[in-house]
Length: 192
Image (cartoon, rainbow, N blue to C red; front, side, top):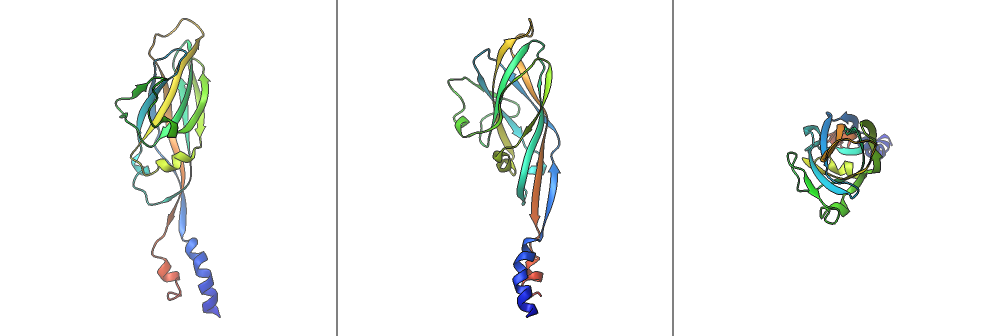
């Protein structure tokens, strides 16, 4: 009778043989050039993922990102939105600029990270991102962020073009589970 009860409990015990760990990546920053007035342009930037997120044998249960969007312009309101793509052509050293009429071919399949919004001059805006695509980014050596941006209006005579928008202190927060393989022998029917 005891053996039968233990045999029924084994699947539950095996499922419990994992650990959940919360991880934060080191902060990263990316500069996005702004080269358009009124009509949006798309800037694709490549972001190399930290080593902590690559070649991991874990289950990602949840992932979010925190960052600060900085508009360093002293006069221009910048309108921006961002999408995450798992494919791209830019390199970390060389962003690619696309026109409104010629977005990147994978733009339609990229998932929205940051809905369109205006960033006032000389402000830092904290942003929290919670997107299912972030889970898919774990394990990838590089991801691409496609930012649509433009100058929408000016508050004073100010900076000449090109301007920039800075995504600062990007930190990924992940809750991961790591199974403990090999314990099934001790907990299996012949082990107990």
